[in-house]
Length: 275
Length: 352
Image (tube, rainbow over all chains, first blue to last red; front, top):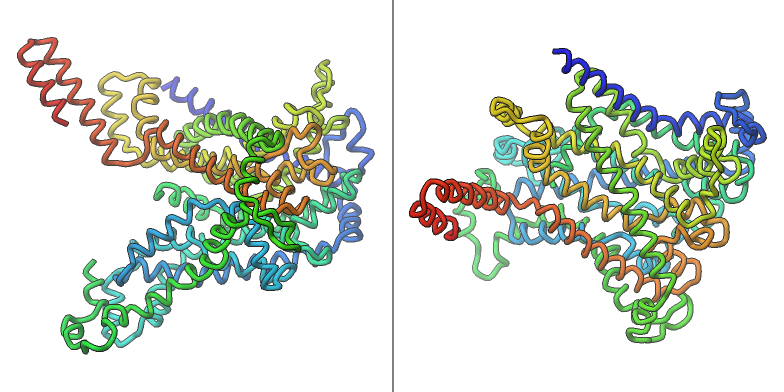
Protein backbone atom coordinates (compact mmCIF):
# COMPACT_ATOMS: atom_id res chain seq x y z
CA UNK A 1 0.00 0.00 0.00
CA UNK A 2 2.84 2.35 0.92
CA UNK A 3 4.74 1.83 -2.33
CA UNK A 4 1.51 2.47 -4.25
CA UNK A 5 1.18 5.82 -2.47
CA UNK A 6 4.78 6.75 -3.13
CA UNK A 7 4.32 5.94 -6.77
CA UNK A 8 1.24 8.18 -6.97
CA UNK A 9 3.11 11.07 -5.37
CA UNK A 10 6.11 10.62 -7.68
CA UNK A 11 3.74 10.41 -10.64
CA UNK A 12 2.08 13.70 -9.76
CA UNK A 13 5.47 15.32 -9.15
CA UNK A 14 6.62 14.29 -12.65
CA UNK A 15 3.36 15.55 -14.15
CA UNK A 16 3.49 18.87 -12.31
CA UNK A 17 7.07 19.41 -13.44
CA UNK A 18 5.91 18.82 -16.99
CA UNK A 19 3.06 21.29 -16.53
CA UNK A 20 5.52 23.93 -15.30
CA UNK A 21 7.71 23.39 -18.37
CA UNK A 22 4.64 23.57 -20.62
CA UNK A 23 3.30 26.75 -19.11
CA UNK A 24 6.53 28.61 -18.32
CA UNK A 25 7.08 30.13 -21.81
CA UNK A 26 3.61 31.71 -21.58
CA UNK A 27 4.43 33.16 -18.18
CA UNK A 28 7.72 34.43 -19.54
CA UNK A 29 5.90 35.95 -22.51
CA UNK A 30 3.64 37.80 -20.07
CA UNK A 31 6.61 38.94 -17.96
CA UNK A 32 8.37 40.37 -21.02
CA UNK A 33 5.18 41.93 -22.39
CA UNK A 34 4.46 43.69 -19.10
CA UNK A 35 7.93 45.12 -18.40
CA UNK A 36 9.99 47.70 -20.26
CA UNK A 37 12.68 46.42 -22.60
CA UNK A 38 15.57 47.79 -20.44
CA UNK A 39 14.10 45.92 -17.45
CA UNK A 40 14.07 42.60 -19.32
CA UNK A 41 17.62 43.08 -20.51
CA UNK A 42 18.93 43.99 -17.06
CA UNK A 43 21.02 41.49 -15.12
CA UNK A 44 19.63 39.77 -13.16
CA UNK A 45 16.48 39.85 -15.32
CA UNK A 46 13.11 40.75 -13.85
CA UNK A 47 11.14 37.57 -13.29
CA UNK A 48 7.83 39.04 -12.17
CA UNK A 49 4.93 40.54 -14.07
CA UNK A 50 5.31 44.32 -14.47
CA UNK A 51 2.93 47.18 -15.00
CA UNK A 52 3.62 48.20 -18.61
CA UNK A 53 1.41 45.64 -20.36
CA UNK A 54 -1.13 48.08 -21.84
CA UNK A 55 1.55 50.56 -22.81
CA UNK A 56 3.39 47.81 -24.75
CA UNK A 57 0.17 46.64 -26.36
CA UNK A 58 -0.44 50.23 -27.44
CA UNK A 59 2.96 50.26 -29.14
CA UNK A 60 2.00 47.15 -31.09
CA UNK A 61 -1.12 48.90 -32.39
CA UNK A 62 0.97 51.94 -33.35
CA UNK A 63 3.43 49.89 -35.37
CA UNK A 64 1.39 47.27 -37.19
CA UNK A 65 -2.22 47.05 -38.24
CA UNK A 66 -2.82 44.40 -35.59
CA UNK A 67 -6.61 44.32 -35.74
CA UNK A 68 -6.55 44.44 -39.53
CA UNK A 69 -4.28 41.39 -39.55
CA UNK A 70 -6.43 39.69 -36.97
CA UNK A 71 -9.60 40.34 -38.96
CA UNK A 72 -7.97 39.00 -42.13
CA UNK A 73 -6.79 35.89 -40.28
CA UNK A 74 -10.22 35.42 -38.73
CA UNK A 75 -12.00 35.70 -42.08
CA UNK A 76 -9.54 33.29 -43.72
CA UNK A 77 -9.77 30.79 -40.84
CA UNK A 78 -13.56 30.91 -40.70
CA UNK A 79 -13.81 30.74 -44.49
CA UNK A 80 -11.63 27.63 -44.72
CA UNK A 81 -13.36 26.06 -41.72
CA UNK A 82 -16.89 26.49 -43.08
CA UNK A 83 -15.96 25.16 -46.52
CA UNK A 84 -13.97 22.25 -45.10
CA UNK A 85 -16.84 21.27 -42.79
CA UNK A 86 -19.32 21.32 -45.66
CA UNK A 87 -17.26 19.64 -48.39
CA UNK A 88 -15.57 17.10 -46.11
CA UNK A 89 -18.72 15.97 -44.33
CA UNK A 90 -20.66 15.74 -47.58
CA UNK A 91 -17.94 13.61 -49.19
CA UNK A 92 -17.52 11.56 -46.01
CA UNK A 93 -21.28 10.92 -45.88
CA UNK A 94 -21.21 9.60 -49.44
CA UNK A 95 -18.09 7.49 -48.87
CA UNK A 96 -19.32 6.03 -45.59
CA UNK A 97 -22.93 5.26 -46.34
CA UNK A 98 -23.39 4.68 -50.09
CA UNK A 99 -22.06 2.21 -52.57
CA UNK A 100 -21.28 3.59 -55.99
CA UNK A 101 -19.07 2.44 -58.85
CA UNK A 102 -15.45 3.38 -58.22
CA UNK A 103 -16.01 4.33 -54.59
CA UNK A 104 -13.15 2.29 -53.17
CA UNK A 105 -10.82 3.40 -55.93
CA UNK A 106 -11.64 7.07 -55.27
CA UNK A 107 -11.18 6.61 -51.54
CA UNK A 108 -7.85 4.87 -52.10
CA UNK A 109 -6.78 7.78 -54.29
CA UNK A 110 -7.76 10.17 -51.51
CA UNK A 111 -5.67 8.25 -48.98
CA UNK A 112 -2.71 8.28 -51.37
CA UNK A 113 -2.71 12.09 -51.31
CA UNK A 114 -1.61 11.94 -47.65
CA UNK A 115 1.83 10.97 -48.89
CA UNK A 116 2.47 14.25 -50.68
CA UNK A 117 4.25 16.83 -48.53
CA UNK A 118 2.75 20.30 -48.96
CA UNK A 119 6.15 21.79 -49.75
CA UNK A 120 6.48 19.65 -52.88
CA UNK A 121 3.72 21.58 -54.62
CA UNK A 122 4.63 24.95 -53.12
CA UNK A 123 6.39 26.50 -56.11
CA UNK A 124 3.91 25.41 -58.82
CA UNK A 125 0.99 26.27 -56.52
CA UNK A 126 2.33 29.78 -56.29
CA UNK A 127 2.73 29.89 -60.08
CA UNK A 128 -0.84 28.59 -60.56
CA UNK A 129 -2.30 31.19 -58.20
CA UNK A 130 -0.29 33.92 -59.89
CA UNK A 131 -1.75 32.74 -63.20
CA UNK A 132 -5.26 33.04 -61.68
CA UNK A 133 -4.38 36.51 -60.40
CA UNK A 134 -5.15 35.43 -56.84
CA UNK A 135 -1.81 36.34 -55.22
CA UNK A 136 -2.41 38.75 -52.35
CA UNK A 137 -6.14 38.03 -52.14
CA UNK A 138 -8.23 36.16 -49.62
CA UNK A 139 -9.03 33.59 -52.30
CA UNK A 140 -5.40 32.42 -52.21
CA UNK A 141 -5.73 31.80 -48.48
CA UNK A 142 -9.13 30.11 -48.58
CA UNK A 143 -9.79 28.18 -51.80
CA UNK A 144 -6.74 25.83 -51.95
CA UNK A 145 -7.54 24.56 -48.46
CA UNK A 146 -11.32 24.33 -48.89
CA UNK A 147 -11.43 20.52 -48.82
CA UNK A 148 -8.86 18.14 -47.45
CA UNK A 149 -8.17 14.45 -47.40
CA UNK A 150 -7.60 14.26 -43.65
CA UNK A 151 -11.02 15.74 -42.89
CA UNK A 152 -12.82 13.39 -45.29
CA UNK A 153 -10.96 10.37 -43.94
CA UNK A 154 -11.67 11.34 -40.35
CA UNK A 155 -15.33 12.22 -40.92
CA UNK A 156 -15.87 8.99 -42.85
CA UNK A 157 -14.62 6.91 -39.93
CA UNK A 158 -16.90 8.93 -37.71
CA UNK A 159 -19.93 8.68 -40.01
CA UNK A 160 -19.56 4.91 -40.40
CA UNK A 161 -20.19 4.35 -36.73
CA UNK A 162 -22.46 7.28 -35.98
CA UNK A 163 -25.14 7.15 -38.69
CA UNK A 164 -27.59 4.25 -38.41
CA UNK A 165 -28.43 2.70 -41.77
CA UNK A 166 -32.10 2.53 -40.77
CA UNK A 167 -32.32 6.32 -40.63
CA UNK A 168 -31.12 6.63 -44.21
CA UNK A 169 -33.54 3.93 -45.38
CA UNK A 170 -36.38 5.73 -43.61
CA UNK A 171 -35.45 9.04 -45.24
CA UNK A 172 -35.35 7.30 -48.61
CA UNK A 173 -38.78 5.81 -48.08
CA UNK A 174 -40.01 9.32 -47.32
CA UNK A 175 -38.77 10.31 -50.76
CA UNK A 176 -35.75 12.34 -49.70
CA UNK A 177 -32.97 12.67 -52.27
CA UNK A 178 -29.29 12.27 -51.45
CA UNK A 179 -28.69 15.88 -50.47
CA UNK A 180 -31.80 15.94 -48.30
CA UNK A 181 -30.65 12.76 -46.60
CA UNK A 182 -27.32 14.44 -45.91
CA UNK A 183 -29.05 17.49 -44.40
CA UNK A 184 -31.68 15.73 -42.33
CA UNK A 185 -29.94 12.49 -41.34
CA UNK A 186 -26.21 13.09 -41.77
CA UNK A 187 -25.54 16.57 -40.45
CA UNK A 188 -27.36 16.35 -37.10
CA UNK A 189 -25.64 13.07 -36.20
CA UNK A 190 -22.23 14.26 -37.37
CA UNK A 191 -22.29 17.40 -35.23
CA UNK A 192 -19.72 16.28 -32.59
CA UNK A 193 -17.34 15.15 -35.34
CA UNK A 194 -17.81 18.46 -37.10
CA UNK A 195 -16.97 20.32 -33.89
CA UNK A 196 -13.60 18.57 -33.72
CA UNK A 197 -12.80 19.03 -37.40
CA UNK A 198 -13.85 22.68 -37.12
CA UNK A 199 -11.55 23.48 -34.19
CA UNK A 200 -8.72 21.51 -35.79
CA UNK A 201 -9.04 23.32 -39.12
CA UNK A 202 -9.48 26.72 -37.51
CA UNK A 203 -6.34 26.35 -35.36
CA UNK A 204 -4.27 25.14 -38.32
CA UNK A 205 -5.26 27.99 -40.60
CA UNK A 206 -4.91 30.57 -37.83
CA UNK A 207 -1.36 29.40 -37.07
CA UNK A 208 -0.19 28.77 -40.62
CA UNK A 209 2.89 30.72 -41.55
CA UNK A 210 4.60 29.44 -44.70
CA UNK A 211 1.63 29.62 -47.09
CA UNK A 212 0.47 33.16 -46.15
CA UNK A 213 4.11 34.28 -46.17
CA UNK A 214 4.30 33.26 -49.81
CA UNK A 215 0.91 34.32 -51.16
CA UNK A 216 0.12 37.47 -49.15
CA UNK A 217 2.56 39.80 -50.82
CA UNK A 218 0.78 43.08 -50.08
CA UNK A 219 2.35 44.50 -46.87
CA UNK A 220 -1.01 46.02 -45.93
CA UNK A 221 -2.74 42.64 -46.08
CA UNK A 222 -0.80 40.28 -43.85
CA UNK A 223 -2.08 37.49 -41.66
CA UNK A 224 -1.46 37.65 -37.93
CA UNK A 225 1.53 35.29 -37.94
CA UNK A 226 3.28 37.09 -40.78
CA UNK A 227 2.55 40.51 -39.25
CA UNK A 228 3.92 39.27 -35.94
CA UNK A 229 7.15 38.12 -37.59
CA UNK A 230 7.44 41.51 -39.33
CA UNK A 231 7.13 43.17 -35.94
CA UNK A 232 9.84 40.86 -34.63
CA UNK A 233 12.12 41.52 -37.59
CA UNK A 234 11.83 45.28 -37.74
CA UNK A 235 11.45 46.11 -34.06
CA UNK A 236 13.43 43.17 -32.68
CA UNK A 237 15.18 45.45 -30.21
CA UNK A 238 11.89 46.40 -28.57
CA UNK A 239 11.31 42.99 -27.07
CA UNK A 240 8.53 44.12 -24.76
CA UNK A 241 6.44 45.28 -27.67
CA UNK A 242 7.18 42.16 -29.72
CA UNK A 243 6.13 40.00 -26.79
CA UNK A 244 2.99 42.05 -26.24
CA UNK A 245 2.12 41.34 -29.87
CA UNK A 246 2.82 37.64 -29.43
CA UNK A 247 0.64 37.57 -26.32
CA UNK A 248 -2.22 39.33 -28.09
CA UNK A 249 -2.00 36.81 -30.93
CA UNK A 250 -2.15 33.67 -28.77
CA UNK A 251 -4.81 34.73 -26.25
CA UNK A 252 -7.88 34.32 -28.54
CA UNK A 253 -6.82 30.87 -29.66
CA UNK A 254 -6.00 29.64 -26.17
CA UNK A 255 -9.38 30.96 -25.02
CA UNK A 256 -11.19 28.98 -27.73
CA UNK A 257 -9.13 25.92 -26.91
CA UNK A 258 -9.76 25.98 -23.16
CA UNK A 259 -13.50 26.24 -23.77
CA UNK A 260 -13.68 23.45 -26.35
CA UNK A 261 -10.44 21.64 -25.57
CA UNK A 262 -11.49 18.62 -23.55
CA UNK A 263 -13.36 16.88 -26.36
CA UNK A 264 -10.85 18.13 -28.88
CA UNK A 265 -7.97 16.33 -27.15
CA UNK A 266 -9.95 13.11 -26.87
CA UNK A 267 -10.75 13.30 -30.58
CA UNK A 268 -7.12 13.97 -31.57
CA UNK A 269 -6.14 10.84 -29.67
CA UNK A 270 -8.99 8.83 -31.19
CA UNK A 271 -8.00 10.06 -34.65
CA UNK A 272 -4.43 8.87 -34.18
CA UNK A 273 -5.64 5.46 -33.05
CA UNK A 274 -7.65 5.02 -36.25
CA UNK A 275 -4.67 5.41 -38.57
CA UNK B 1 -23.83 -2.94 -45.48
CA UNK B 2 -27.54 -3.59 -45.56
CA UNK B 3 -28.24 -0.02 -46.46
CA UNK B 4 -26.06 0.02 -49.55
CA UNK B 5 -28.45 -2.47 -51.13
CA UNK B 6 -31.45 -0.29 -50.36
CA UNK B 7 -29.73 2.88 -51.40
CA UNK B 8 -28.54 1.43 -54.66
CA UNK B 9 -32.19 0.95 -55.46
CA UNK B 10 -34.51 -2.00 -55.96
CA UNK B 11 -33.33 -4.60 -58.40
CA UNK B 12 -36.42 -4.02 -60.53
CA UNK B 13 -35.15 -0.55 -61.26
CA UNK B 14 -31.88 -1.87 -62.64
CA UNK B 15 -33.52 -4.28 -65.06
CA UNK B 16 -35.86 -1.51 -66.20
CA UNK B 17 -32.82 0.41 -67.38
CA UNK B 18 -33.05 0.95 -71.14
CA UNK B 19 -30.16 -0.62 -73.06
CA UNK B 20 -29.29 2.59 -74.93
CA UNK B 21 -29.13 4.92 -71.89
CA UNK B 22 -26.05 5.19 -69.66
CA UNK B 23 -25.79 2.39 -67.07
CA UNK B 24 -28.26 3.09 -64.31
CA UNK B 25 -25.67 2.40 -61.60
CA UNK B 26 -23.65 5.40 -62.68
CA UNK B 27 -26.64 7.65 -63.23
CA UNK B 28 -28.05 6.81 -59.83
CA UNK B 29 -24.70 7.61 -58.24
CA UNK B 30 -24.53 11.14 -59.66
CA UNK B 31 -25.35 12.77 -56.28
CA UNK B 32 -22.54 10.77 -54.63
CA UNK B 33 -20.07 11.75 -57.32
CA UNK B 34 -21.13 15.36 -56.86
CA UNK B 35 -20.60 15.02 -53.11
CA UNK B 36 -17.05 13.73 -53.39
CA UNK B 37 -16.09 15.92 -56.35
CA UNK B 38 -15.14 19.17 -54.53
CA UNK B 39 -12.13 17.47 -52.97
CA UNK B 40 -11.03 15.87 -56.22
CA UNK B 41 -11.50 19.07 -58.21
CA UNK B 42 -9.55 21.13 -55.67
CA UNK B 43 -6.92 18.42 -55.44
CA UNK B 44 -6.57 18.31 -59.21
CA UNK B 45 -6.00 22.08 -59.38
CA UNK B 46 -3.99 22.67 -56.22
CA UNK B 47 -2.42 19.25 -55.62
CA UNK B 48 -2.04 16.90 -58.58
CA UNK B 49 -1.39 19.51 -61.23
CA UNK B 50 1.24 21.37 -59.15
CA UNK B 51 2.97 18.09 -58.31
CA UNK B 52 3.17 17.10 -61.98
CA UNK B 53 4.10 20.63 -62.93
CA UNK B 54 6.88 20.61 -60.35
CA UNK B 55 8.49 17.62 -62.13
CA UNK B 56 8.43 19.62 -65.36
CA UNK B 57 9.63 22.73 -63.54
CA UNK B 58 12.55 20.92 -61.93
CA UNK B 59 14.01 20.22 -65.38
CA UNK B 60 13.94 23.93 -66.23
CA UNK B 61 15.73 27.05 -65.21
CA UNK B 62 13.13 29.74 -64.51
CA UNK B 63 12.98 32.96 -62.53
CA UNK B 64 9.18 33.08 -62.49
CA UNK B 65 8.87 35.92 -65.01
CA UNK B 66 11.01 35.24 -68.10
CA UNK B 67 10.89 32.20 -70.37
CA UNK B 68 11.52 28.72 -69.03
CA UNK B 69 14.76 27.17 -70.23
CA UNK B 70 15.08 23.39 -70.48
CA UNK B 71 18.19 22.25 -68.62
CA UNK B 72 17.46 18.53 -68.22
CA UNK B 73 18.83 16.98 -65.07
CA UNK B 74 21.18 19.91 -64.46
CA UNK B 75 19.26 21.11 -61.39
CA UNK B 76 19.52 17.66 -59.87
CA UNK B 77 23.19 17.16 -60.67
CA UNK B 78 23.90 20.62 -59.23
CA UNK B 79 21.78 19.73 -56.18
CA UNK B 80 23.97 16.71 -55.47
CA UNK B 81 27.11 18.86 -55.41
CA UNK B 82 25.56 21.89 -53.68
CA UNK B 83 27.17 22.24 -50.22
CA UNK B 84 24.24 24.37 -48.96
CA UNK B 85 21.79 21.61 -49.89
CA UNK B 86 23.81 18.97 -48.02
CA UNK B 87 24.17 21.31 -45.11
CA UNK B 88 20.41 21.80 -45.03
CA UNK B 89 19.94 18.03 -45.01
CA UNK B 90 22.42 17.36 -42.20
CA UNK B 91 21.03 20.30 -40.19
CA UNK B 92 17.48 19.00 -40.59
CA UNK B 93 18.46 15.45 -39.65
CA UNK B 94 20.42 16.60 -36.58
CA UNK B 95 17.56 18.81 -35.40
CA UNK B 96 15.13 15.97 -36.06
CA UNK B 97 17.14 13.44 -34.02
CA UNK B 98 17.92 15.70 -31.07
CA UNK B 99 14.28 16.78 -30.85
CA UNK B 100 12.46 13.53 -31.61
CA UNK B 101 14.36 11.03 -29.47
CA UNK B 102 14.05 12.92 -26.15
CA UNK B 103 10.54 14.00 -27.12
CA UNK B 104 9.18 10.49 -27.66
CA UNK B 105 10.97 9.15 -24.57
CA UNK B 106 9.58 11.96 -22.40
CA UNK B 107 6.14 11.53 -23.93
CA UNK B 108 6.17 7.86 -22.93
CA UNK B 109 7.10 8.77 -19.34
CA UNK B 110 4.37 11.43 -19.17
CA UNK B 111 1.80 9.11 -20.74
CA UNK B 112 2.60 6.46 -18.16
CA UNK B 113 2.24 8.94 -15.30
CA UNK B 114 -1.02 10.26 -16.82
CA UNK B 115 -2.31 6.72 -17.18
CA UNK B 116 -1.77 6.05 -13.47
CA UNK B 117 -2.98 9.44 -12.27
CA UNK B 118 -6.62 9.44 -11.32
CA UNK B 119 -6.90 13.07 -10.24
CA UNK B 120 -6.52 16.32 -12.22
CA UNK B 121 -6.52 14.37 -15.48
CA UNK B 122 -8.37 16.99 -17.51
CA UNK B 123 -6.18 19.76 -16.15
CA UNK B 124 -2.99 17.89 -17.08
CA UNK B 125 -4.23 17.10 -20.54
CA UNK B 126 -5.13 20.69 -21.32
CA UNK B 127 -1.86 21.98 -19.85
CA UNK B 128 0.14 19.49 -21.93
CA UNK B 129 -1.77 20.24 -25.09
CA UNK B 130 -1.63 24.03 -25.02
CA UNK B 131 1.94 24.23 -26.44
CA UNK B 132 0.77 22.34 -29.49
CA UNK B 133 -2.06 24.69 -30.43
CA UNK B 134 0.04 27.81 -29.95
CA UNK B 135 1.48 29.39 -33.08
CA UNK B 136 5.09 28.50 -33.88
CA UNK B 137 5.83 32.14 -34.61
CA UNK B 138 4.92 33.34 -31.10
CA UNK B 139 6.61 30.35 -29.44
CA UNK B 140 9.79 30.85 -31.43
CA UNK B 141 9.92 34.50 -30.41
CA UNK B 142 9.74 33.51 -26.73
CA UNK B 143 12.36 30.79 -27.11
CA UNK B 144 14.50 33.20 -29.12
CA UNK B 145 14.54 35.51 -26.12
CA UNK B 146 15.25 32.66 -23.69
CA UNK B 147 18.23 31.51 -25.80
CA UNK B 148 19.35 35.07 -26.59
CA UNK B 149 23.16 35.46 -26.48
CA UNK B 150 23.53 38.45 -24.21
CA UNK B 151 20.38 38.93 -22.23
CA UNK B 152 18.71 35.55 -22.51
CA UNK B 153 17.13 33.88 -19.51
CA UNK B 154 19.17 30.73 -20.04
CA UNK B 155 22.48 32.61 -20.02
CA UNK B 156 21.41 34.63 -16.98
CA UNK B 157 20.75 31.32 -15.26
CA UNK B 158 24.11 29.87 -16.33
CA UNK B 159 25.87 32.97 -15.02
CA UNK B 160 23.98 32.89 -11.75
CA UNK B 161 25.31 29.39 -11.04
CA UNK B 162 28.83 30.50 -11.93
CA UNK B 163 29.08 29.15 -15.46
CA UNK B 164 30.08 30.97 -18.62
CA UNK B 165 27.34 32.09 -20.91
CA UNK B 166 26.96 30.33 -24.25
CA UNK B 167 26.37 32.11 -27.55
CA UNK B 168 23.39 29.90 -28.35
CA UNK B 169 22.20 31.75 -31.42
CA UNK B 170 25.60 32.29 -33.07
CA UNK B 171 26.97 28.76 -32.95
CA UNK B 172 25.81 25.94 -35.24
CA UNK B 173 25.18 23.63 -32.29
CA UNK B 174 23.50 26.23 -30.15
CA UNK B 175 21.14 27.10 -32.99
CA UNK B 176 20.20 23.46 -33.50
CA UNK B 177 19.62 22.95 -29.78
CA UNK B 178 17.39 26.04 -29.67
CA UNK B 179 15.31 24.89 -32.65
CA UNK B 180 15.10 21.31 -31.34
CA UNK B 181 13.89 22.63 -27.96
CA UNK B 182 11.05 24.50 -29.64
CA UNK B 183 10.02 21.40 -31.58
CA UNK B 184 10.24 19.14 -28.52
CA UNK B 185 8.38 21.62 -26.34
CA UNK B 186 5.53 21.89 -28.84
CA UNK B 187 5.08 18.18 -29.53
CA UNK B 188 5.91 16.27 -26.33
CA UNK B 189 2.47 16.79 -24.84
CA UNK B 190 0.76 15.94 -28.11
CA UNK B 191 2.65 12.65 -28.36
CA UNK B 192 1.99 11.91 -24.68
CA UNK B 193 -1.76 12.23 -25.32
CA UNK B 194 -1.50 9.84 -28.26
CA UNK B 195 0.52 7.35 -26.17
CA UNK B 196 -2.03 7.68 -23.37
CA UNK B 197 -4.82 6.72 -25.75
CA UNK B 198 -2.76 3.69 -26.73
CA UNK B 199 -2.16 2.73 -23.09
CA UNK B 200 -5.85 3.00 -22.31
CA UNK B 201 -6.65 0.65 -25.16
CA UNK B 202 -4.57 -2.14 -23.57
CA UNK B 203 -6.81 -4.40 -21.52
CA UNK B 204 -5.99 -4.47 -17.81
CA UNK B 205 -6.59 -8.24 -17.85
CA UNK B 206 -3.23 -8.70 -19.55
CA UNK B 207 -1.43 -6.84 -16.76
CA UNK B 208 -3.47 -8.76 -14.17
CA UNK B 209 -2.43 -12.07 -15.70
CA UNK B 210 1.21 -10.96 -15.81
CA UNK B 211 1.05 -9.87 -12.17
CA UNK B 212 -0.37 -13.27 -11.17
CA UNK B 213 2.56 -14.86 -13.02
CA UNK B 214 4.91 -12.73 -10.92
CA UNK B 215 6.13 -10.31 -13.61
CA UNK B 216 8.03 -7.23 -12.40
CA UNK B 217 6.91 -3.73 -13.46
CA UNK B 218 9.95 -3.52 -15.71
CA UNK B 219 9.09 -6.80 -17.42
CA UNK B 220 5.50 -5.69 -17.85
CA UNK B 221 6.65 -2.44 -19.46
CA UNK B 222 9.01 -4.06 -21.97
CA UNK B 223 7.04 -7.26 -22.60
CA UNK B 224 3.47 -5.93 -22.61
CA UNK B 225 3.27 -2.16 -22.87
CA UNK B 226 5.90 -1.53 -25.53
CA UNK B 227 4.90 -4.38 -27.90
CA UNK B 228 1.20 -3.56 -27.64
CA UNK B 229 1.90 0.14 -28.17
CA UNK B 230 3.76 -0.63 -31.38
CA UNK B 231 1.16 0.73 -33.80
CA UNK B 232 0.86 3.93 -31.76
CA UNK B 233 4.63 4.34 -31.50
CA UNK B 234 4.81 3.85 -35.25
CA UNK B 235 2.20 6.54 -35.79
CA UNK B 236 4.09 9.05 -33.63
CA UNK B 237 7.43 8.10 -35.18
CA UNK B 238 6.16 8.54 -38.73
CA UNK B 239 4.35 11.81 -38.02
CA UNK B 240 7.40 13.13 -36.12
CA UNK B 241 9.61 12.21 -39.06
CA UNK B 242 7.40 13.91 -41.59
CA UNK B 243 7.07 16.97 -39.34
CA UNK B 244 10.79 16.97 -38.50
CA UNK B 245 11.84 16.94 -42.13
CA UNK B 246 9.56 19.91 -42.81
CA UNK B 247 10.91 22.23 -40.11
CA UNK B 248 10.85 25.77 -41.41
CA UNK B 249 9.11 28.37 -39.28
CA UNK B 250 11.48 28.10 -36.31
CA UNK B 251 14.62 28.97 -38.24
CA UNK B 252 12.77 31.51 -40.39
CA UNK B 253 11.44 33.40 -37.36
CA UNK B 254 14.80 33.26 -35.57
CA UNK B 255 16.94 34.31 -38.54
CA UNK B 256 14.70 35.18 -41.49
CA UNK B 257 15.00 38.92 -41.01
CA UNK B 258 18.74 38.86 -40.36
CA UNK B 259 19.73 38.50 -44.01
CA UNK B 260 21.13 34.96 -43.81
CA UNK B 261 18.15 32.62 -43.78
CA UNK B 262 19.95 29.87 -41.85
CA UNK B 263 21.50 32.18 -39.27
CA UNK B 264 25.23 32.43 -38.46
CA UNK B 265 27.19 29.79 -40.38
CA UNK B 266 23.86 28.55 -41.80
CA UNK B 267 23.56 26.50 -38.61
CA UNK B 268 19.77 26.64 -38.79
CA UNK B 269 19.36 26.17 -42.55
CA UNK B 270 16.72 23.45 -43.01
CA UNK B 271 15.59 21.75 -46.21
CA UNK B 272 12.35 23.72 -46.39
CA UNK B 273 14.05 27.01 -45.54
CA UNK B 274 16.55 26.31 -48.33
CA UNK B 275 13.64 25.53 -50.66
CA UNK B 276 11.87 28.73 -49.62
CA UNK B 277 15.00 30.83 -50.05
CA UNK B 278 15.89 29.32 -53.44
CA UNK B 279 12.40 29.69 -54.89
CA UNK B 280 11.03 32.84 -53.28
CA UNK B 281 14.21 34.59 -52.12
CA UNK B 282 16.43 34.04 -55.16
CA UNK B 283 13.63 33.36 -57.70
CA UNK B 284 15.14 30.05 -58.78
CA UNK B 285 11.81 28.32 -59.23
CA UNK B 286 13.18 25.27 -61.03
CA UNK B 287 15.78 24.68 -58.35
CA UNK B 288 13.16 25.09 -55.64
CA UNK B 289 11.06 22.42 -57.34
CA UNK B 290 14.06 20.08 -57.47
CA UNK B 291 14.65 20.58 -53.71
CA UNK B 292 10.95 19.77 -53.18
CA UNK B 293 11.46 16.40 -54.89
CA UNK B 294 14.55 15.68 -52.83
CA UNK B 295 12.47 16.38 -49.71
CA UNK B 296 9.73 14.05 -50.95
CA UNK B 297 12.22 11.23 -51.53
CA UNK B 298 13.66 11.74 -48.03
CA UNK B 299 10.22 11.62 -46.43
CA UNK B 300 9.29 8.41 -48.22
CA UNK B 301 12.68 6.89 -47.37
CA UNK B 302 12.49 7.70 -43.68
CA UNK B 303 8.85 6.63 -43.42
CA UNK B 304 9.82 3.24 -44.87
CA UNK B 305 12.79 2.98 -42.47
CA UNK B 306 10.50 3.79 -39.53
CA UNK B 307 8.02 1.24 -40.76
CA UNK B 308 10.70 -1.44 -40.96
CA UNK B 309 12.32 -0.58 -37.64
CA UNK B 310 9.14 -0.56 -35.64
CA UNK B 311 7.67 -3.48 -37.49
CA UNK B 312 4.64 -1.97 -39.16
CA UNK B 313 1.10 -1.99 -37.85
CA UNK B 314 -0.09 -4.72 -40.15
CA UNK B 315 -2.16 -6.79 -37.73
CA UNK B 316 -1.97 -9.93 -39.79
CA UNK B 317 1.81 -9.85 -39.92
CA UNK B 318 2.05 -9.20 -36.19
CA UNK B 319 -0.28 -12.07 -35.40
CA UNK B 320 1.53 -14.47 -37.69
CA UNK B 321 4.82 -13.38 -36.13
CA UNK B 322 3.43 -14.02 -32.66
CA UNK B 323 2.17 -17.41 -33.85
CA UNK B 324 5.61 -18.29 -35.16
CA UNK B 325 7.14 -17.26 -31.87
CA UNK B 326 4.74 -19.52 -29.93
CA UNK B 327 5.51 -22.38 -32.26
CA UNK B 328 9.24 -21.88 -31.84
CA UNK B 329 8.78 -21.95 -28.10
CA UNK B 330 6.74 -25.16 -28.28
CA UNK B 331 9.44 -26.64 -30.49
CA UNK B 332 12.13 -25.61 -28.02
CA UNK B 333 10.22 -27.13 -25.12
CA UNK B 334 9.80 -30.34 -27.04
CA UNK B 335 13.52 -30.33 -27.84
CA UNK B 336 14.14 -30.28 -24.11
CA UNK B 337 11.85 -33.24 -23.49
CA UNK B 338 12.70 -35.50 -26.39
CA UNK B 339 14.32 -35.41 -29.82
CA UNK B 340 11.59 -37.16 -31.77
CA UNK B 341 8.97 -34.72 -30.54
CA UNK B 342 11.22 -31.78 -31.34
CA UNK B 343 11.52 -32.79 -34.97
CA UNK B 344 7.78 -32.91 -35.32
CA UNK B 345 7.50 -29.47 -33.71
CA UNK B 346 10.14 -28.03 -36.00
CA UNK B 347 8.38 -29.33 -39.08
CA UNK B 348 5.23 -27.74 -37.81
CA UNK B 349 6.96 -24.42 -37.26
CA UNK B 350 8.60 -24.48 -40.70
CA UNK B 351 5.28 -25.09 -42.36
CA UNK B 352 4.23 -21.58 -41.39
